[in-house]
Image (cartoon, rainbow, N blue to C red; front, side, top):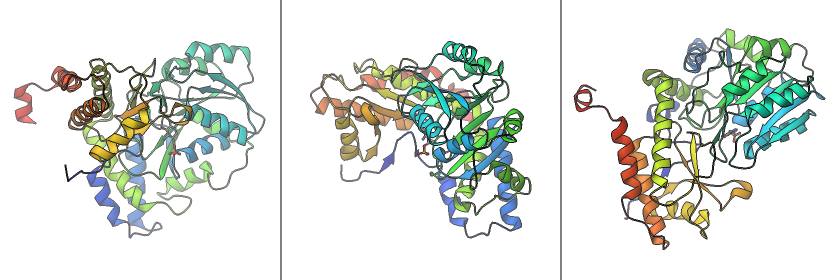
Length: 390
Ligand SMILES: *Cc1c(COP(=O)(O)O)cnc(C)c1O
């Protein structure tokens, strides 16, 4: 037990793709050269490909929250009526952004661990025809909850409102049919399922959203998406880009293209399912009533602070997992599945969790959680003949 490899197992930042990490060393390039323009055009084309949309896709230098703000200031005006679906810390972030930009927000609030129901969105839109935008998290990372974005999209589509979806942990963990479901602005971030460090965010933007941008009056300067679009056409960014992260992004997009975005989603879904199944024999309860596949939020055993589990993952195994955020701190621990996670990781995570529970006096039958993951693996494993070929 003297060598303990550090493992980053959080729902952002996530484990890094080695090829992407190595590519960052080539960042001694200038951004107003043909080398860069080739790279940038490739990134935007591949991003559009993996998001499976013909809508414009733009990249900005910011963490995910920067793109949430850009999605607000570029398409709306102070005083606009908006509808915010808020089911956790990231829903609350939408509320704070609306307040900062002077929007009049009606908030549909779900208790932590619950999802906002599409029917509530439909009713709120019917009651207030002035609503210009509906804001939601596809995946609410703080509680491990997934929203039914497809059904919400159907409700929003019938109105003039824009549907703005924070898919920062939704991309790569759930199907998202941007055009088919009427998702006008969809936001992603580099440090989640895209397997690279934090610092890039991106948005897909529908023609309906661009039309709204023409009359939107909120001030903008750095995050001027029309300016970004004009530059992107020529393979350039409006400002000095993060070349290191773009080199990494090019590699991760290449990798995601090679396995297929649907397979990246299926991978997270399988690991999430196996994790849920492993919690039963360990006697642990899930926190969410609509659990998604980006992260699984689990309640600790009665009387135990989840911080003990988080701390012992670090001290015993040098593995970094996450506690609950805000008032959920101590109430849940969260196991991530998005991006560069595999069954090998999960076998270890569950075996380690069993040890931590046992060391804290919990009645654990060693191997019972791991066996659940092994069974989930066997359910989906390739037959021997195919394994030999791959
Ligand atoms: C990580 C995350 C964000 C962005 O947070 P940043 O710290 O700004 O990158 C926003 N929404 C959700 C749902 C997230 O998981």
